[in-house]
Length: 225
Image 1 (cartoon, rainbow, N blue to C red):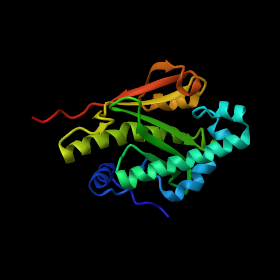
Image 2: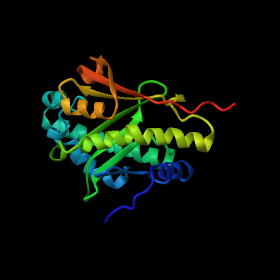
Image 3: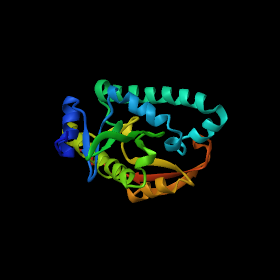
């Protein structure tokens, strides 16, 4: 069953006014707000050691703790993520949140992407996971571009239009999106760069490994006087 195309600005406006779940479409993908019913998929995704190897500190924990303990940790982590995202979408109405990714040819999910809070006021952070079998097809690039270049600008513009004030994250207007990638994760680095993100530094303490930090800046509408 296909999903009717919805203008992104309209979807964002409906979310701010009514809490209506947001759907984003790209050339090949549909990104929709994560729901309770997505738990099974998220746990299957999180417990796939091949898919998750380079994500956060999974490789080290898998080697240190063994597959069974690692799987148990991942099951809990996925459950916590789904609960957090659903609460943000339905209770707190926070748009910095998680989206399930599927192709337009098949409603079955292939991954997820999040545009969440960063470490600093006004900063957001994005991360994504695509099933190993679906990698190398350009889906990660489409998803990250949609979040970085379309979704966040639409949030900023429409929030300001509706409420006459800047959209904030952690007490400050949204001005930056960051992402991290291991130095040997060349596909992820390519995805960030295609989305217009630029490497700004390296963080040796992020997940216990040296990771490149990629960033893109946003401009807020002028403050009304």
